[in-house]
Amino acid sequence: MKNIILIAPPAAGKGTLATQLKEKYHIPHISTGDILRDVAGRDDEIGMYVQETMSKGALVKDEIIYQLLEERIKEKDCQNGYILDGFPRNLEQAKRYDEILEAVGQSLGFVIILDVDKEVLKKRVTGRRICKDCGAIYNINIENNMPKKDSTCDVCSGALYQRSDDNLEAFEHRYQAYLDMTEPLIDYYGEKGVVRHVDGGVSKEATLKAVEEIILEKK
Image 1 (cartoon, rainbow, N blue to C red):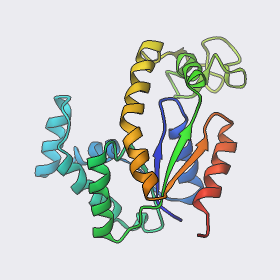
Image 2: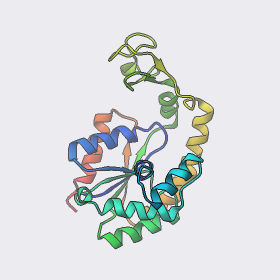
Image 3: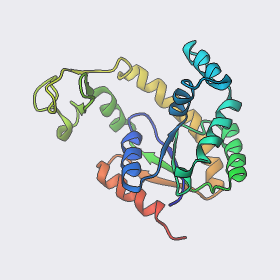
Image 4: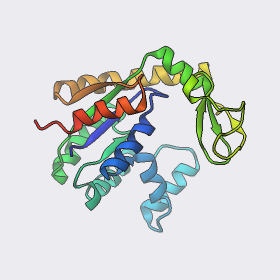
């Protein structure tokens, strides 16, 4: 199994795909946000720094993130591959990640881009509803993902709500930020020949199948 970097616009289904791959292939899904939250609970210098920085809403220094990421991918469960989500976010981080991989003896693997039409993403974002009790996710704009009863969870009958940032204005901002961030990254990794594009606008089963065909390539 090769390592995977997942890059996708908001509402493209990246989290769902990562969960599917994690469960099927028993490889870790590594998010820098999760790493930082875990470290914030440690009773050491780095843990206290991360906790204090995050509590202020500030950004943790990149050097700390590089150190923690290197520690994480050295762990035994990463030796058969892993899914990296939310990193790298810019060219500097991508180049430092290359250095980390060389230091730990890991290969880059694939950079998988989920492509979804912008109008489809808008429908996903503005129609998304989440159960307050069990966290089940629905979409009132997509026929096969609507709740059977308005504003009520099919699973536990809990009330459904819409996230405050699931609106067109917030989506446009997040989408443009995604384009600005990823264009140079895609060019950088494209030159390395590791970028693969997958249609994320189809069913989650079809998207998973397409990704599997890529990551199980023999060459």
